[in-house]
Image 1: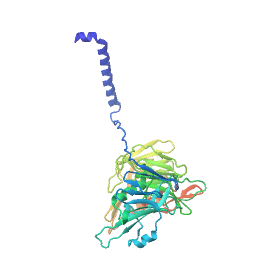
Image 2: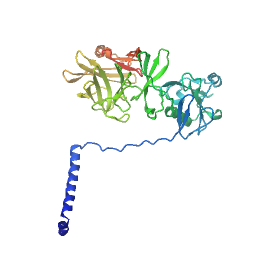
Image 3: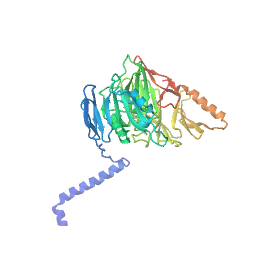
Image 4: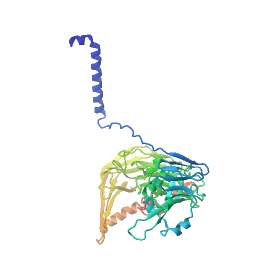
Length: 448
């Protein structure tokens, strides 16, 4: 061994140095970044092979997977492996009403388990209607015979896009699922979303219960769509928005539409320039649906975003233990104001007292309970202002109710919600107001 060392002294020294450097490097890594997670390799999404059909007359394309087969030469038609047929054709809806005793399913609820019949493909709005045979007795299931989208692919077209069973058979669940998937991710109408210009007159509405479709496969998780309706009641898509839930937390501030996106982050969409940005907020990370930490609620007051971050507590009877932050839209600086907040919603900011008011509210079986908290910017102090609870048949706590009413009155200009946004000569203005809790309502602060 000694002889080997003398003959290979340089090589042994070099190996020793490399080992020392490697051990030191590993030690330094775990000392400097002990909690840094190891990077995960990107997950490759397997693409489904499709065949493209292009209609030059109406300028639309359909990319259909293997379970569909092109049928017919003169007119667009696809036949499903289960036997149903999708086609662009003429349809006598009056004859359908006369033929099927159940008439037309106005809500289309039994067709795709949704309470809306609005369909959005690319920049266009359509109406989906299904028709069915209702059973003679209550034990039998409804037989869905078909469905159709009128005025396809343009508003001036007399054609429909229909799906029906072959040889008069009803639609099976597999066909219905694949048909919805086809119009959701396979149809491209080559249209551009609407852009507001100085002559634009109409309203912008946030649709959250609509069945949102699009040629981009990434839209399958989209929760809502901003729809522009002109003075002639024509609807066109302004933008698709990836909302976190069907009961979205959103706010209009000037020309900016703020909302919590599907990854739990705060995004803003400029209604005029269409610029979309996501804010980098302390305590909030991009996460999968219903995981934490996340953004529980936010409120924009002038150039400041107040927000509550932490484990998700927006579920039924969930208890909150959140952090309250303030983020400057001008300097992009963030400050942790306080921790251990038991509220789940920000009510507003009172400039006179320099207090941020927050609320926890829930209810069950004819009862409701509510607690209001405030944080003083001047004193850097969090306090519980009032507790109020009520069940049907109980006598009301008038003192607590008066305190709640006083706080609500103080913040009345900040507790307003819009049914829609008004567009007048290209300018963004507040539209008509609705009550708090209305689905799709957009928060708006008159003091801005």
